[in-house]
Length: 206
Ligand code: TMP
Image (cartoon, rainbow, N blue to C red):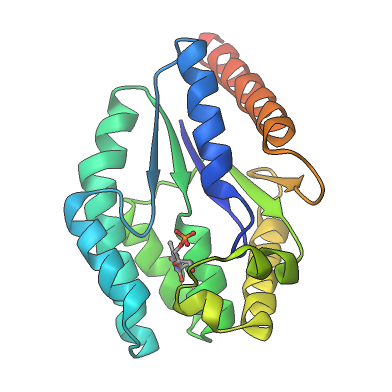
């Protein structure tokens, strides 16, 4: 099962994923964590370029999709085959939000490239960690170029995520993170994933 985690900067995705992995481990459920851009050796090299260098928006989009194609082929597809739970820190919805809504590139082009890079596969579940953009930005200790782009940019990113959520309510779960401990958030998300896994198993049996 492919599960992605999305949100604006500083919303706590990485911490949540770390907590979840521990829980899966404790329950002896096979799970891996990975991230985009990155997750495989070549994709991690592309990540370095994207996050550190200024570039044309279309160039940036192609780099994200190149990294994604490589990551999907080398990491996600094999893990899906091995029936593992994959916790992916950002995925295709980030491209809609950042390159589409914030950078202003055409959504239809992004959707086509997303499909190509992932062999048409979308996550079974996507969590949106909902935190006011001002608070998330204030948490950044070593800001990347998207964090440096400021509040107005992040507001557009947020609009992009809300658009994707409206389009596909079944796949998304919105998790409020303001004033909550990482442990409490992890408990809630873990329970949702376990419930979804059980429903999937039931459906397969029928
Ligand atoms: P991270 O800081 O959550 O690891 O994500 C890296 C940055 O890349 C973050 O600022 C969001 C951005 N990003 C995009 O602009 N488009 C994408 O498709 C992805 C996956 C990330």
